[in-house]
Amino acid sequence: MILCSYVERITKPLIPLWDILARFYMARIFFKSGLTKIDDWEGTLWLFKQEYGINFMPTFMAYSATALELIAPVLLFLGLGTRVAAAGLTLFSVCIHLTYPAFHEHYFWMLILSAITLYGPSTLSLDFWLLKRRSCQR
Image 1: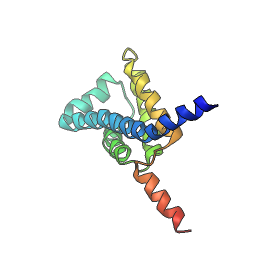
Image 2: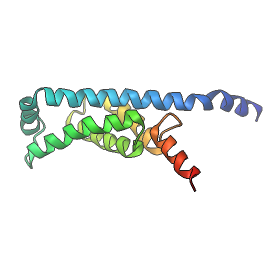
Image 3: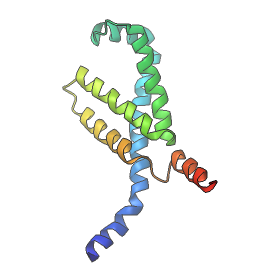
Image 4: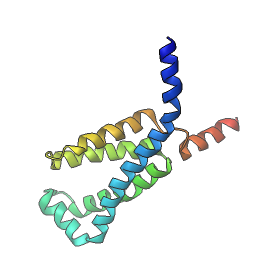
Protein backbone atom coordinates (compact mmCIF):
# COMPACT_ATOMS: atom_id res chain seq x y z
CA MET A 1 0.00 0.00 0.00
CA ILE A 2 2.80 2.43 0.87
CA LEU A 3 4.66 1.49 -2.33
CA CYS A 4 1.57 2.22 -4.46
CA SER A 5 1.16 5.61 -2.80
CA TYR A 6 4.83 6.41 -3.36
CA VAL A 7 4.72 5.37 -7.02
CA GLU A 8 1.54 7.40 -7.58
CA ARG A 9 3.10 10.49 -6.03
CA ILE A 10 6.02 10.20 -8.45
CA THR A 11 4.10 9.33 -11.62
CA LYS A 12 0.97 11.46 -11.31
CA PRO A 13 2.74 14.79 -11.93
CA LEU A 14 4.28 13.27 -15.08
CA ILE A 15 0.89 12.70 -16.76
CA PRO A 16 0.55 16.27 -18.14
CA LEU A 17 4.10 16.11 -19.45
CA TRP A 18 3.43 12.77 -21.19
CA ASP A 19 0.19 14.13 -22.62
CA ILE A 20 1.67 17.28 -24.09
CA LEU A 21 4.69 15.45 -25.50
CA ALA A 22 2.48 12.78 -27.08
CA ARG A 23 0.17 15.41 -28.58
CA PHE A 24 3.08 17.44 -29.98
CA TYR A 25 4.80 14.33 -31.36
CA MET A 26 1.70 13.14 -33.21
CA ALA A 27 0.74 16.63 -34.38
CA ARG A 28 4.17 17.11 -35.93
CA ILE A 29 4.00 13.85 -37.90
CA PHE A 30 0.59 14.52 -39.42
CA PHE A 31 1.08 18.25 -39.99
CA LYS A 32 4.31 17.64 -41.91
CA SER A 33 2.48 15.07 -44.03
CA GLY A 34 -0.26 17.58 -44.80
CA LEU A 35 2.31 20.22 -45.78
CA THR A 36 3.94 17.69 -48.10
CA LYS A 37 0.57 17.07 -49.76
CA ILE A 38 -0.08 20.76 -50.47
CA ASP A 39 3.53 21.29 -51.55
CA ASP A 40 3.03 18.92 -54.52
CA TRP A 41 -0.71 18.86 -55.17
CA GLU A 42 -0.40 17.14 -58.55
CA GLY A 43 1.65 14.41 -56.93
CA THR A 44 -0.95 14.11 -54.18
CA LEU A 45 -3.74 13.68 -56.70
CA TRP A 46 -1.68 11.07 -58.53
CA LEU A 47 -1.11 9.19 -55.26
CA PHE A 48 -4.80 9.10 -54.45
CA LYS A 49 -5.75 7.92 -57.93
CA GLN A 50 -2.90 5.52 -58.71
CA GLU A 51 -1.01 4.51 -55.57
CA TYR A 52 -3.92 4.36 -53.14
CA GLY A 53 -6.35 3.09 -55.76
CA ILE A 54 -9.19 5.38 -54.75
CA ASN A 55 -11.69 5.21 -57.59
CA PHE A 56 -14.58 7.01 -55.91
CA MET A 57 -14.08 10.78 -55.83
CA PRO A 58 -10.26 10.74 -55.52
CA THR A 59 -9.97 14.55 -55.66
CA PHE A 60 -12.49 14.97 -52.84
CA MET A 61 -10.68 12.29 -50.82
CA ALA A 62 -7.34 14.05 -51.38
CA TYR A 63 -8.79 17.36 -50.18
CA SER A 64 -10.40 15.66 -47.16
CA ALA A 65 -7.25 13.81 -46.14
CA THR A 66 -5.14 16.94 -46.55
CA ALA A 67 -7.59 19.02 -44.53
CA LEU A 68 -7.58 16.39 -41.77
CA GLU A 69 -3.77 16.33 -41.73
CA LEU A 70 -3.58 20.11 -41.47
CA ILE A 71 -6.47 20.87 -39.09
CA ALA A 72 -6.48 17.95 -36.63
CA PRO A 73 -2.77 18.33 -35.69
CA VAL A 74 -3.26 22.01 -34.87
CA LEU A 75 -6.21 21.12 -32.63
CA LEU A 76 -4.19 18.30 -31.08
CA PHE A 77 -1.23 20.62 -30.50
CA LEU A 78 -3.44 23.21 -28.79
CA GLY A 79 -5.42 20.63 -26.87
CA LEU A 80 -8.66 21.97 -28.33
CA GLY A 81 -11.21 19.34 -29.31
CA THR A 82 -8.45 16.95 -28.41
CA ARG A 83 -10.45 13.72 -28.28
CA VAL A 84 -12.16 14.39 -31.61
CA ALA A 85 -8.86 15.29 -33.30
CA ALA A 86 -7.09 12.26 -31.85
CA ALA A 87 -9.96 9.93 -32.81
CA GLY A 88 -9.92 11.25 -36.37
CA LEU A 89 -6.17 10.77 -36.63
CA THR A 90 -6.48 7.28 -35.12
CA LEU A 91 -8.94 6.27 -37.85
CA PHE A 92 -6.72 7.94 -40.42
CA SER A 93 -3.76 5.91 -39.11
CA VAL A 94 -5.78 2.73 -39.58
CA CYS A 95 -6.44 3.71 -43.21
CA ILE A 96 -2.76 4.50 -43.72
CA HIS A 97 -1.81 1.14 -42.26
CA LEU A 98 -4.24 -0.69 -44.54
CA THR A 99 -2.52 0.99 -47.49
CA TYR A 100 1.04 0.44 -46.24
CA PRO A 101 0.95 -2.58 -43.88
CA ALA A 102 4.73 -3.07 -43.92
CA PHE A 103 5.33 0.09 -41.88
CA HIS A 104 5.00 -0.88 -38.24
CA GLU A 105 5.23 2.64 -36.80
CA HIS A 106 1.54 2.99 -37.61
CA TYR A 107 0.81 0.70 -34.65
CA PHE A 108 2.74 3.10 -32.43
CA TRP A 109 0.74 6.04 -33.79
CA MET A 110 -2.55 4.23 -33.24
CA LEU A 111 -1.54 3.36 -29.67
CA ILE A 112 -0.60 6.94 -28.76
CA LEU A 113 -3.64 8.47 -30.46
CA SER A 114 -5.97 5.90 -28.90
CA ALA A 115 -4.60 6.73 -25.45
CA ILE A 116 -5.19 10.43 -26.06
CA THR A 117 -8.70 9.68 -27.31
CA LEU A 118 -9.57 7.48 -24.33
CA TYR A 119 -8.00 9.52 -21.54
CA GLY A 120 -8.47 12.98 -22.99
CA PRO A 121 -6.12 15.89 -22.54
CA SER A 122 -4.46 16.79 -19.27
CA THR A 123 -4.15 20.12 -17.52
CA LEU A 124 -1.83 21.42 -20.26
CA SER A 125 -4.58 21.86 -22.85
CA LEU A 126 -7.14 24.43 -23.89
CA ASP A 127 -9.88 21.82 -23.38
CA PHE A 128 -9.00 21.54 -19.69
CA TRP A 129 -8.95 25.30 -19.13
CA LEU A 130 -12.14 25.96 -21.10
CA LEU A 131 -14.00 23.21 -19.25
CA LYS A 132 -12.61 24.40 -15.92
CA ARG A 133 -13.77 27.94 -16.64
CA ARG A 134 -17.18 26.71 -17.75
CA SER A 135 -17.69 24.63 -14.61
CA CYS A 136 -16.69 27.59 -12.42
CA GLN A 137 -19.46 29.73 -13.90
CA ARG A 138 -22.25 27.41 -12.76
